[in-house]
Length: 359
Image (cartoon, rainbow, N blue to C red; front, top):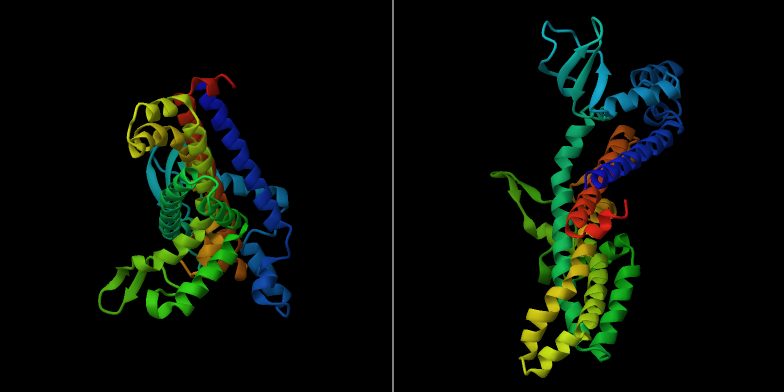
């Protein structure tokens, strides 16, 4: 089991390292961000000053090594040496723990990953992303919950009504839901329920988890969560429904189900007590894997509904050439995706020893 966990951790490390390399090269072979921010008519002195402040006057190799040093939890940094070899302190890079002094101005430290600072607001990128992460997490979890509950119910009904008009209609809708991109579904849902039917639904096109009240300050407004949840949950709902249908049909064809039916058990008891629990295993496996994908897929939906989350923050940063925010957001999403998949692999390995034998 230790070898299995070690292999998964090593694979996750290489995936993250690959993401960091690609993201760094992608945003460092582009035209100067200083020129983009100041405009084409900016004088050379101003452009050079901003590039120097951003560290772009150095070679790309040195910039990459410095970026890795900033991201690494254990790194070499220019912190003022204290009398004690080990201490906890604060700097512009965040909280750090001094491990080993190397010289009068350099030491090995244990710190939180430093994602640089925003070009526009000068805030630390980590702070910007942490502020936006709860909105994305709430949207992803609510969408997955919506997709799981509704998808399982519709899939079971379709399996019980196999080859009927309802079954064929459900399969067509699930196919459309799987094929339709999230941004198209989001725009369509927003137009129907927030504009055409607004007087009946009372839902707004834009809004976030909290709204600003002039007297009460930030107020929780769950109504704004409804439309983004539906838009983001349509595709996983379609897949969950298809999986539930096929899994239920497979279970219903087993001998023990026919035996239970032949003994005269009430049909709903056969379904709930014998068929359902076995049919849900592959469905729940797929659901757990979809959660990480929803975190990344929320970018377009958050932008369409002006939902304050990592997706909207990233898209806004792209519009203002705020590359550190974009790079930090992509790395954060990749890290979450890798961590969730590693945890799922470890759980599967604990539950099924055959998976560990594949190492």
